[in-house]
Length: 83
Image (tube, rainbow, N blue to C red):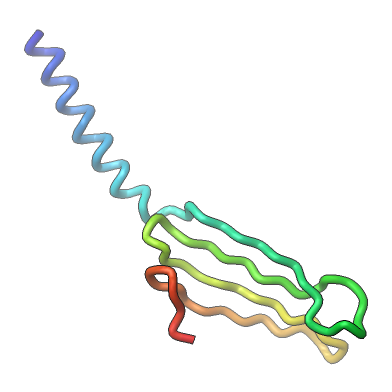
């Protein structure tokens, strides 16, 4: 019985450690294609959001125009951006 309790306590500690470490993994994603200019065909522009368990991460967006493609990135901290 004591050995079982020792094993259970050890497992609980390991699970807690893994749960804390996993908060930094990408857990939330979003992707959207869109057409910002109605006179151009196709949804060639996009935005992708990658967030961890604390809503920290990045937003990458691409704006497609006839002149070229522009890519923008911004940091997300606690679900909000400074930009």
